[in-house]
Length: 89
Image (cartoon, rainbow, N blue to C red):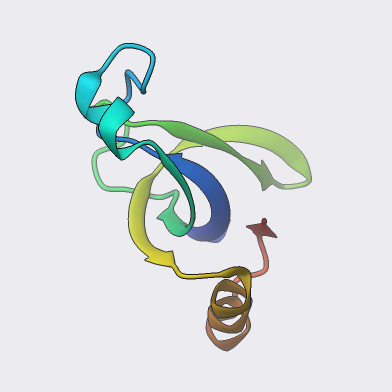
């Protein structure tokens, strides 16, 4: 399974999200991000999750945000140059 995917996500401060966290409400914005779905110490740190495809089947994986992109063109260009095939915008 590839360890990096690109997704459009709501950027938040913590896993509680904008409904329950004031800091998340203040920074609540949708962005296109490079996500590491193979983070260190899975299950030992509370993280948000995203759906990915593993061996043709959907699976939920924890992730860390590696970087964000300004627009779809930049994200697609990065994906093409790095060989990232799992891109959902």
